[in-house]
Image 1: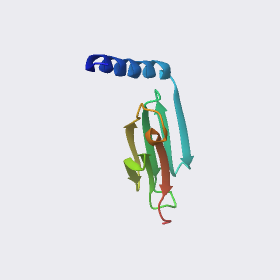
Image 2: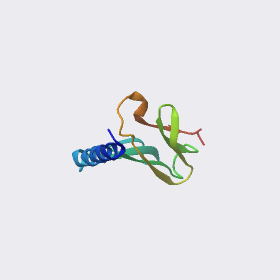
Image 3: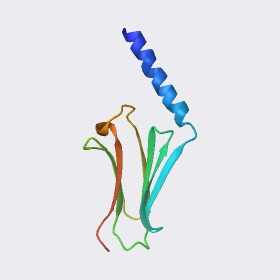
Length: 109
């Protein structure tokens, strides 16, 4: 395959993935209203994360992290408010290309 054909094929795969995933989203929320985290997958390609830790929480902080193949893509910590952030997925298949979400609470106040 020449460079132009490869580029066209890659573009077609991205457009196809967006069309297949259009309108679909998966979401998960963890914790409580005063201290927790959430992740939303949009169009099967973008992840929007959030962590919150409000003044009525019994924890000092709450955090979330996105990782892929052991590397941290994004990490945010909320101390007395809400923090958000987004990462883009990798379109390749396999465990080392899988984006993972985790969250944690800090020490008790």
